[in-house]
Length: 197
Image 1 (cartoon, rainbow, N blue to C red):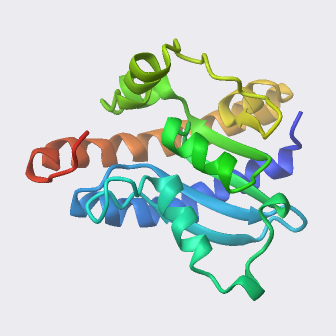
Image 2 (cartoon, helix red, strand yellow):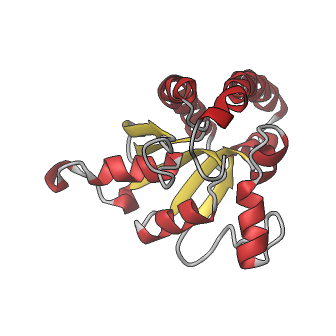
Image 3 (cartoon, rainbow, N blue to C red):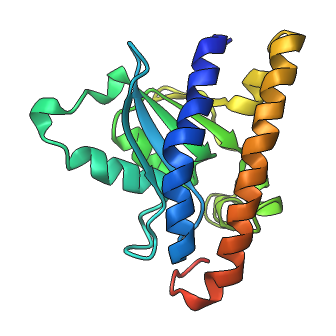
């Protein structure tokens, strides 16, 4: 089980580093997915990014984060094996592959594919997994030879009751903010030219 301090740190990064970038991106017409990289040793933030599909439909939150990461000078860029990959939403098949090809051995996420479909009206992750790979929801191998994935909500459910209740309240607060951003995105998405909006 992940330690409490790590879970809290990942929520800090979502709230204070990813969400502000996402809020700005959503007002321009981008989706509400974001990602960040943290150093494993001291959990310092290396980079936080958000979806930038208006520039390129491949710049999902995770993909845009990786793009920016590889734009860093090699001499100052950490090895991916020394980093934690954090995604606000469970990565789609494109992003799962990118995380793998980039050499990460882990990723953490807050909202599931089902949340993307049901709460945020963005069903494409599950549709692509079903249509292209014939996988049902949750059908990909969440722990494999390349990486292990962690649902933050599941990790929170496994905590002792006092910590669990406190962090469930935090998840609810974060979820409310994402619901607001989702409403903004849904209201404006017909005005953009993102292929799968």
